[in-house]
Image (cartoon, rainbow, N blue to C red; front, side, top):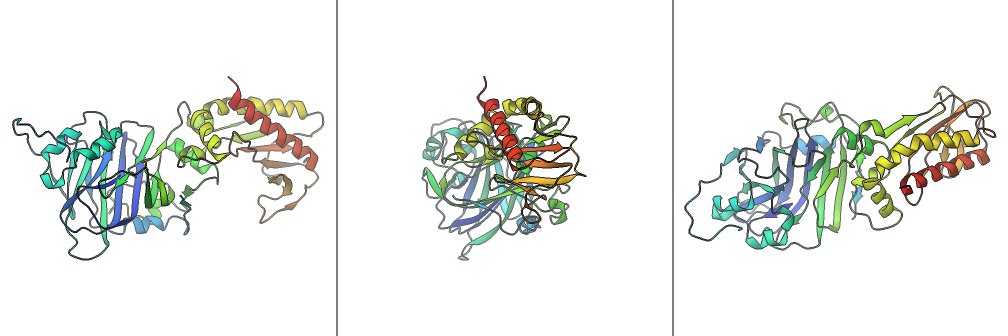
Length: 412
């Protein structure tokens, strides 16, 4: 959420980095261009455990690393896809101690453990009660508050990255504060100009890496190849890559989450049999809420039925191989044999349309299938053969794999 205690004429080019830390915390880095006419506060909600202590948030000074996001972007393809897309008591209670204030580069920062604690901030930096009434989902959140100074008439100033680590209420979820309120209102839709970068949990990273579907783009390099691990104070994992998405235009005014599908583990994401191997894909679970078909149904399946699909993939493919073994020459799966793939409904030799050609080569080989249905997004299945099938045989296998998917997600 990009929310200010007073009106700002302009906010744009927002960049947010989020990383799931191994100690059950999350790292968050936030930057933007902004016009600030008077001293005010920017507030970010944090899904911390309920009743977190006042020192639960660790603020990190990145004033000496203003190019943090510029360096990070160098690890990603040049064109990242875009997804088009003052509350306190006024009674006469005894005074309460002020919240701790931390100097973080150009900012002063505080962690507000609960809404009632906004009364312990300087009145200039409190949020109106109407703000919390309009956003009831933050009733038991904590808040990171950064005090911004006037930009002295300079328009659209780059704010050096604001950074901190905080304990996560849900250890399976990575959180991006993308709800934003700039003029005291909370519209159902808002104009976004955001770029989000994530280093999620291994499970989410594996699901995002498994397919080209969707606008989350994987980095070309480990982030440490471009991001200075000393100047970023360990906020990034330099040995691993990340994922990036752009949010641009009028989009539902919601926070963004990368949440692990319930009941799924890393071991569930792949399997094999005597002549085949498969990999589970579920990228649509991590996109903005989808409304067009079949993508909306794919998303519902990815968010609620991936464990069911994982359990059924191996046995379903094995049954299909057994059923077709009388007419199709299945054999040991080996990448040393001739590669083939399904280019849409067509059987091709090679590994991609750029190096392949339509048809099949006689003899041993394997075929990469990418079956999907109206209920299940494209999945990965590779099957070996002592004699690669012709187009008709490949069609029969593909139809059978599609049936495996649909039976898996519709069974009780």
